[in-house]
Image 1 (cartoon, rainbow, N blue to C red):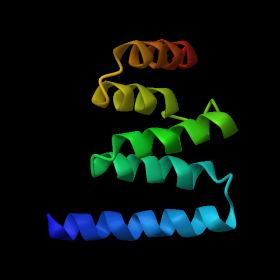
Image 2 (tube, rainbow, N blue to C red; image 1 turned 90 degrees about the vertical axis):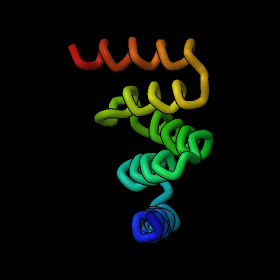
Image 3 (cartoon, rainbow, N blue to C red; image 1 turned 45 degrees about the vertical axis):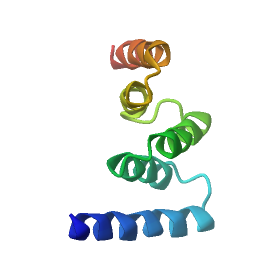
Length: 91
């Protein structure tokens, strides 16, 4: 477990370094959100994902990831809206 946390910590630092140089880097922001979710920082993860929404609302996997985060936070209405959006974009 410590090894996994260490790996996540290093990857979060890489994301932060990338975002300092390029705050609009959606890959780094999305990845940061995913890694924050892995350590159960769901609110912070959702903030990252919402920044990706602002920059590129058609980013691959965005709406499904956002739906999962809303579920983790107990926000079922928001999760359902994100699921609908993900389904609409998949068509």
